[in-house]
Image (cartoon, rainbow, N blue to C red; front, side, top):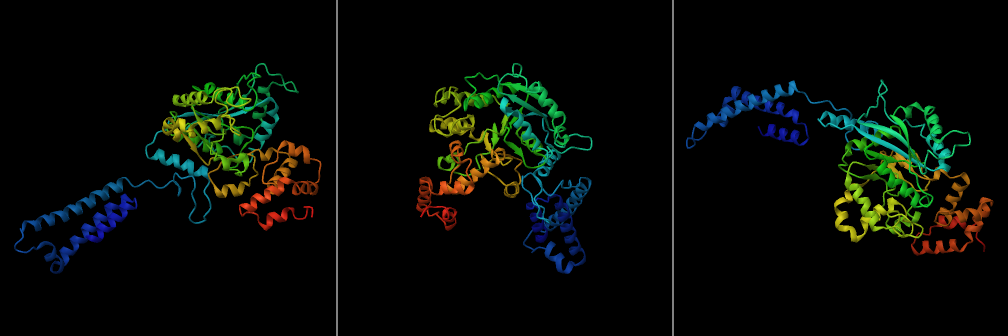
Length: 488
């Protein structure tokens, strides 16, 4: 009896509830056999009681055993008629999953698709939603935009059934080209085509593994004035307007600037998965994306403890409280808060903090806003589905080994010229900082050896070495970078 109870508890804790009927059945039947066939050894112990005890209790024990046997048979019948659902995959909802035999990482798209199927099997019903993938651009970026999109081609955007329908069908997705000026009054391109015509023809000839995953393409105009259309105000105003332009048409949107690239198959399914679980009313988040995961020296983000979510992120449109948050941010950072910023909510006034993504974060960190921010801070969530690498070089394979759930990467590095990329690597190695426009003007045209000689004999290099020495980080390898080029 004790053995049966122990096994029952073990199965209960392990989650295998459907095995309990067999435990009850075997337990009760085993006791009955012992009592029937070995009465001398077991019967007297189980049923006969000392004379001082009421003999009626023995009959109650017998009835208890009979009830256990009957309960076991009843539960067995129920489990036979309603067997447990077979597992869809070895992976459940987590974004990482490892196959036990091969130890290979199961693609994040498989885990997401299986996760939604599992939730559907449990009775969850998901409302159909609408998602916009928004690509903001200015006139000078038109060619860059299509060049970027050609880099999507190695990775299919979604899983399709044999009938050409999306496997994750809870979200309808459109691709939206978002112009900073007015498309109706924009001049024609050099070949005479309108901007809309150019992108439409490009899309018609684009990879079917991508185009079939979208319902349609669309176009929007921000209609920025010349006074607004400057950094950081231009992209900021364009983003604020986007929320009003899309509200009522879509439930969510993903802002995908020209320097965002997919690095895995089914990246659009990954976005649909995030939208599905969040719901049209923004149950879990208003904004979801990546903090800066580049070198901590970039913009001094490590020193400044800058954990803001980059603007290339997912946004939810279904909660009016998000617009209230906008108004609070704009009131806290009024127009003129920073030199050159004429739009409220577009800069904190501090160095390297221009843009709505910075004001969204810094507003919530300011002590003056604590009583409000503590109630809404959870609406801004970090996620590995996109990684913001700023302007850093990255290795796709290494990144996916570290975080298999990553689908998209934001980085300007792939779009730099080979000469600028080489200069970027050189400055990080020799001076510990990123190269700037003035550095390019000074060193372009020199050979790599001449550039090394200039940098290694500069005051900045000497100061960098002293700083590393004070921190105990000046290694022989760092010294060796400049040893052949420094003047004696």
